Image (cartoon, rainbow, N blue to C red; front, side):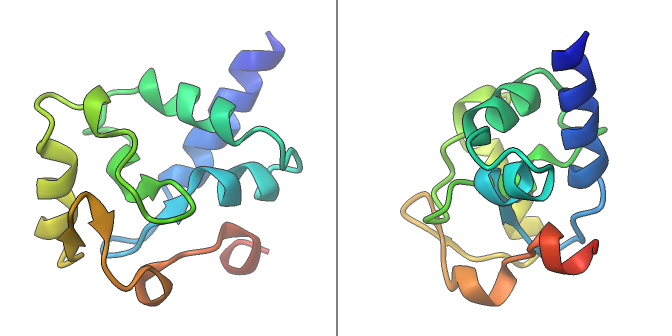
Length: 108
């Protein structure tokens, strides 16, 4: 039951990431008061319908598209980001600082 509650909180944060912005698994975990749970954030996002929850907007702390294999087709995550004018080079967000959205700052 506790795990489902954490997953629900992850989804509540992810749906608030604005179009054209990205955040990291760790930033979400930190916002939720569980900074050591970045991997669990990833597990939560592996379980969602990516058209209901914009999981494509969550990357690792270096901006790598580490979750791309959980989308239908390994290029879908990149395509969705590029459709939002986010530049991706070699499976990594270009100029991550410019498009990074920190829930601890934006939702507080």
